[in-house]
Image (cartoon, rainbow, N blue to C red; front, side):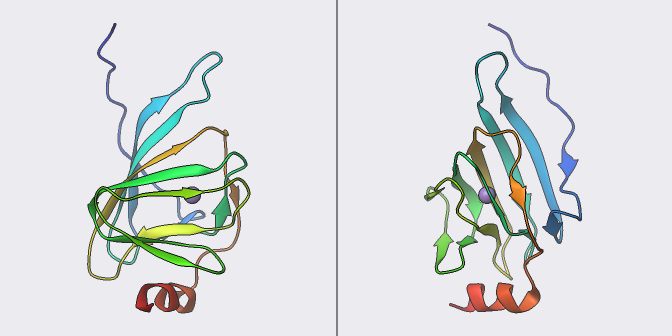
Length: 129
Ligand code: MN
């Protein structure tokens, strides 16, 4: 076994996120493993752009309060909550307007399919619900 050296915390790029988002790579499988685990920290109001994962994604909140939204539904998530988005389902995730939010993101495909940024109107509709 080995203790893995920690990689530098990375800012979420502005093309894919709105607001201040930082992530740490927890695990990235090698060889046959497709395991991907990141810790992602969102400042209040910060969120991903619309996107989907070809093999789905699991999110588990470890701190704060956040939301996951699809075109049809919004889930408020708190520490200990786990949310699954199925393969190909368009969604976004982020913090509520007055709390930070940290989640673990777990998925297996290399890259998400990214769409438009979540507008302030979309964000307010989802977080007001
Ligand atoms: Mn996602």
